[in-house]
Image (cartoon, rainbow, N blue to C red; front, side):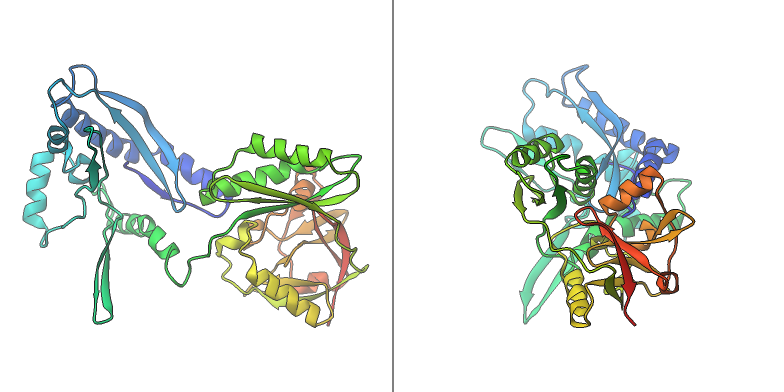
Length: 394
């Protein structure tokens, strides 16, 4: 594993970062250097000619980073034991660099302190001789709590080569340690599910089903959920066969891949025009929850409760720069010259399925909107309710 890029909440930018990593000459060169070193280490204990490289320079995506990964395989030579293998491949060349022995000598000379478990290996050897070991990087080491105080150490690093730039290497370290910040007590979300809320009609089924499935698939990929699109589609269609009247169909998907489906009555129609109030965006515009429909929706529920308390049916969220982003359960649209304008997804908002459908058809496009743009009327909408005329309460 050598070569890193950060993840992005924007799907297009995220894909571009992964593609950039896959095409990076520098990252490929570093990855290849380590692959060659590991092949050499394995050849010391492998059957002649059995060392192979599978899927070189593959890009794997994790919740906070994209990684360039190459897999090296070999068959152990007869009479070679697990400990022989461990001695041959550790310390791992991916953290010593090459040439390995000279690199280790330089590390010993230059580094002031011993690394401890960091860059070592943690693993197990089974009774039958099978074994699994990692390389102890990005590993949190906890010290026992004494007198109410404990200590946690997280080791991260980057591969410094002749043309490395210090600032870029430091940024890479921050990216690699990002998972720890995302899991801190202040930012960690409770366990949550992904949600899709769909409208069923006896004559047309779920008209936007494929867009719903694509959105939850994309969120699953970004957030590390197991998701079988084909199986989920089949279960939705089986449920719809039992429905005889228009209905609200709700899909909830767990991280494990388990899903739950339920069907119920459509919600009561909103007033025409629907009264709305404006509220400050209650979370940071970069909050990941804005871009994925999940069960962790407390801040949306609080905004809607505030709207109901003010005699409105929807709360419009406004970012610190005065830009309207979305409603608590709808997207926002303003008609201009026959085209619907809707706030850009890059501002931090849920990419609604109805919104996506309108943009794809050319009926809508992204544009920055302020409250002043809404003074003469606007629309709110989602896939369940469709487009609804709305007005601001003052």
